[in-house]
Image (cartoon, rainbow, N blue to C red; front, side, top):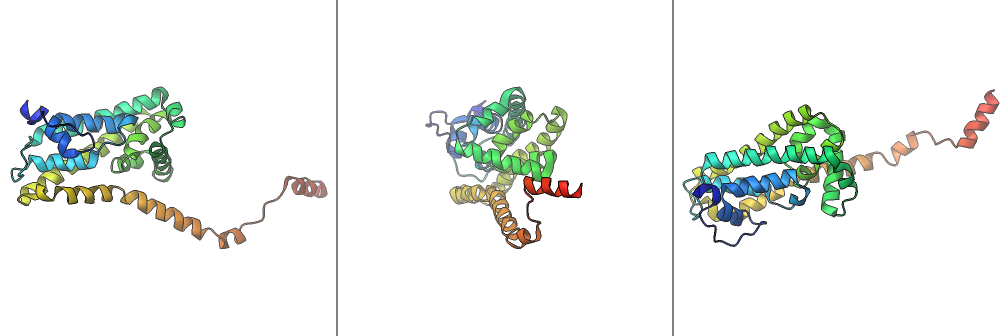
Length: 243
């Protein structure tokens, strides 16, 4: 129970800090954060990626931190939060997520919704559901959006389980492996987390660059190759002449 709730519950809880969440709540914090980030639109700001990596790091015996976690418990909490959260988000979207997303005023969520639509149109449901796990904010928005689009629950469940396990278990084991290999690696925790955060936005940057290149490539030469638009009056005049 000590590992589940955290060994230092008296530490002030900062929901934006991975170390604070883990020191205060332990593996339970992993479950709650991942559930909120992937299942509830209000959880878009939570640090899912860095939390998973840090939790794995604190499970390694070489960590100098006062907070030590159980790897099996963290893996169970990570997988449970990621999978149950995504399924909850899907159900919310199925019940009434479309109006909720359309009337949302948060600019970050709106950008996430736009990015989710791009992913769905480019890759289809399966690949988009898996890829969304690795993109902040998008993994919050895409689940209710897919539910609102009426995707079969079986299709969504299969792909969200695949993506959820790869993301949650993979990042946790990555942190654990690094912590077990390099002594006192938690001294470099802030730079490592910074790299993880930056890396998580790489897919978005790549997509933006690709879109700009495609937009530049379509003008002005492509515009010259395309036939000029025909007005309705000209079309009617041409039809009358042909007759």
